[in-house]
Image (cartoon, rainbow, N blue to C red; front, side, top):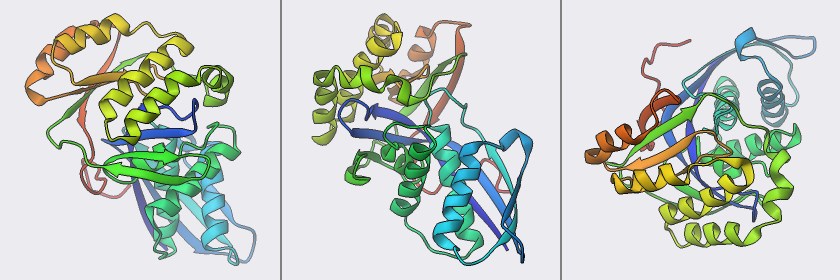
Length: 291
């Protein structure tokens, strides 16, 4: 039995650590998981390529098998490929977890909703200490188009809105990684007012205002000095910009005709630059050939 699952990276509009409400939207950087299952009379085992093996991958596989095939045991082989830079705030963990869960469901011929996969992914991330809130907003964003606002504690969708399909997303990605979100929990919760401003903007359907309010808080707590750069980007025509997750990635939303000015504004040699879009349909890898 074989199954393939796909998900995508995403960017933050509201970090949920401050108030419990989070907001994120998917971007066209894909993750794909391919799973092979064979029935066995012994305990379930999982083989994963060394470069893809992690506690997250194994915990997601175990949780999905427990939920969707609790009475059977399997010999499993799993392969993963990803376009999402890890530990940069671009939701690589949520994307990998979602892709693995979808691969399990596909191999078992089980139909599951995005909410089911997202809740499973969020539960796993929180249970292993990878996310303080479970990041249900990130999980949904990696699975379906639109900008999502969620109550992360209740694992509940509050609203989903479409985004202008012409908008481009420029990612400026400095070459260092972030710490897991539980490290920052107390610092965010000690400054709830800024978090509430971002939350209110997201709940009224203004993701760009939410992004601006959120990033001021994240920069202050985590220690990024992006304010002058973000002002320069706005003068160059960017519609909005902000730290994604806990960074260090800076996500810049821009109309296509302003991309050249945005790219010229980014500091040369200080980080990688990717140009992508918000997702508008099913997740696709550039090549549809199987792993």
